[in-house]
Length: 204
Image 1 (cartoon, rainbow, N blue to C red):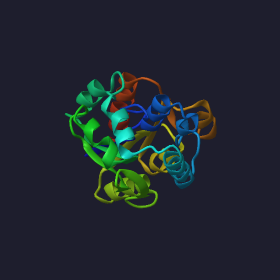
Image 2 (image 1 turned 90 degrees about the vertical axis):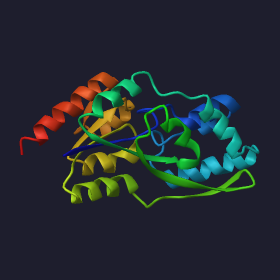
Image 3 (image 1 turned 180 degrees about the vertical axis):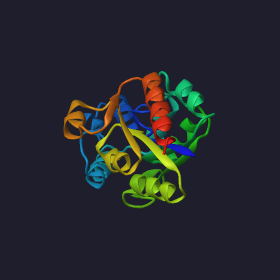
Image 4 (image 1 turned 30 degrees about the horizontal axis):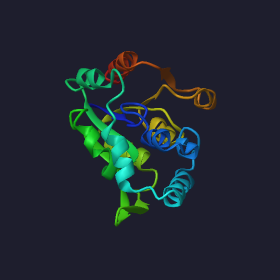
């Protein structure tokens, strides 16, 4: 059995923090794991900005409430479901992204938790360090062949661990830094690439 592991933001839905930056005009919130591979430094910076500007969980949820999946994402998932088990591996937070799962047909989602006190985001709890790679490794331990797709620095260990890793709409620096991965820029082509990878894996 083949299992498909997908990143969430910029693969299936827009980037939540970029949406918040556009709503508030705080350009520093535009930074994502595409820009900074140090997730903890990125989150500490985000939390400082939220605190400095008095932004609450409600402000973030208003951004999410206006979001819909990226063009092509829903039909892409519908195409894959009859053929594969699908798991979303994300460094986002349940408290933010859960409402978006309905648009996507409620796929299995592994992500993190925010610590919230009287509406303020005061911290965050990772499911575990390097959680995407470790999830893929655990699935492989259950004798799944894993095909993974992502777009950012925090996806690289997942893509490397997977039996097949694919970069989806990555920035140019990601392509040059990680030339070993197939690169696709369209959901239909990503579906083709996943199906082709499954055929190769199933030969063995």
